[in-house]
Image (cartoon, rainbow, N blue to C red; front, side):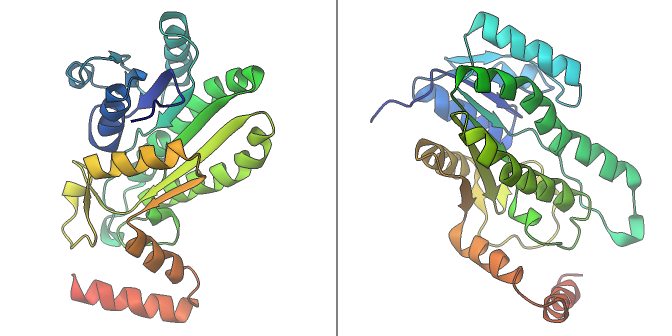
Length: 250
């Protein structure tokens, strides 16, 4: 198996789910991994090659401090996989503004805080690979995702905006758009999740896409195709399908 092109990687959201599996997989392939999450205890058992850097990504100053520590202790960061995320289903009959605020703080601004530390250094070095986890939920508005979906749509737009400029400086940008992945977050859902994949399978697909330096890494393919086609539907037809879904799964 060929070696990976990165010596040091930083993975946020590494305590559970996709972030955890990506950190473990990178370390198993010989990459030195700095793993961050709010729970220090959950970072303690990620195995050899993984170094714990507890962090709350909503704290911009803490993000800068951890970035600087990683550079001082492990070396410059060649790859960053920004996987910290949160999700709480939102029903219109319980319109919780705090859900929007908290979700955006972690999912979107958490990525922005990390990019604020990573982008200047990678641009000055003329190399680096940045990846963050968005979602197919960012393609179009979906029921119960009114707080979650917009944060992921923002991440998609962010990647599209930054890629042309950063690639001119030698910095690669990758956008990860998974469908349903079996994690503690999706375990909250009380509806059928089509084409559900394990976090381990998701991590393998992500790493394969990162190795190829793909811009969009989206899976599973059939579900991605369905949601992308839904973006092309006129509103009348799209909302008719959504109403049928809600009636079937209420």
